[in-house]
Image (tube, rainbow, N blue to C red; front, side, top):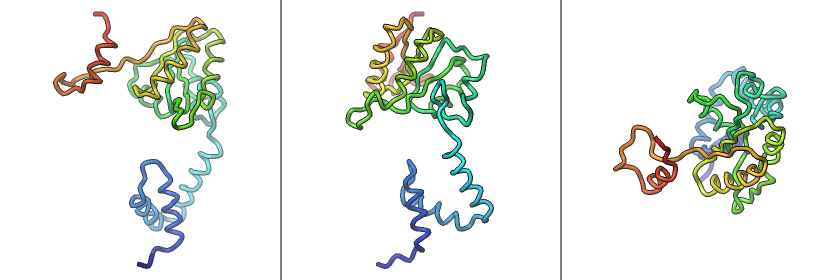
Length: 200
């Protein structure tokens, strides 16, 4: 059966499909939508893509994305620089910030150790974290990686590097979500809740 889609639309759809979570059906819908946009809107969209690629880099301190030398969080003198929360991606920071309960700083690893995925410790921002701790200003490092095989392995690896430096290393507690009924919680979550129980 012949393909009646114009080549530029096909090429644009293929580019959209390279984005995470975008299948070919959605990619085609987005490509067709671009044809309905005004020239100025398309130009703004194009400029925004180029601007992100050209002007966003890693913060000198926490490795978060920024368009300055340091990110706004690291530049905020009201935050507690003695506590550093280690996360996998820059997107994870937004989740903690949304809660409004954490006033420390962050460190972004940009991935997790995954031998099967060919991601080794040297591929992550671990050495930058060690330099921060060696500066002597950090008192506690919170490992906030996901509770997965890769997340746990990364947390343990980093904890083993940090403990000899005399810094307190903690791990996020994982367990039963607030407002849930125990009868509906799976076995793994119950076990995590028991392991991470706190004294009352």
